[in-house]
Length: 277
Image (cartoon, rainbow, N blue to C red; front, top):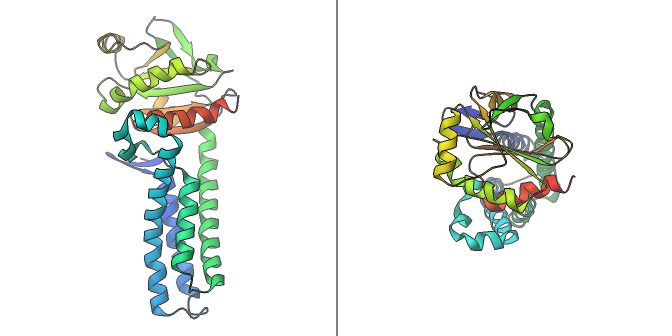
């Protein structure tokens, strides 16, 4: 199944960001293969370049994670084990890209600078074009879904009524372990960010099940809506539970997150919509 966010293969999710990176890298290597003789690269230099690409990826990922952890050290010090839980997708792209580029340049310092510049230019251009194409597809889902849902109080709520303030929409279910783990994080954020509206949308469960779950775990949310047919997941293309969407005050989708969200990643994404108020 394809969505604007990823390719879904059963239990596996392949984000478009990863696909774009791999396709761009393979295309850049193809171009480099065609022009390497023109720049008189020896076999050793060519082998060194290919090896440095994979080590640069590792360097980039590690430094991007370390940079993100350092920038959010207050939250990670409160929960040290979360530092190594990279599934929260907490990475600083700019730090990682800068370190990976620096590593590539240093490891290939004996190769023609013109060749390296062409290789990097092709890579950056490919990523930019692919990212632009995906962004155009995602534009179709950048506005609030036009959906009316029932609340636990048996009243109907249109998502349109939340316009005017930043909004976080979370898709969840009581049987989902990652949903259960992130619930206290979202509940605390609801208190810490009073100017942000947190709309929790349960997927395909009864009101009785949801009410029992909230009481059992002593959770309280201002906006708890029921979506028995999973219409929200279909409209937003977020088929993974949990999924979280971040809208600015104008109702534009600015960030998404598939899977369990950590306090640090949640703060980063909340800041991105609060700054746009």
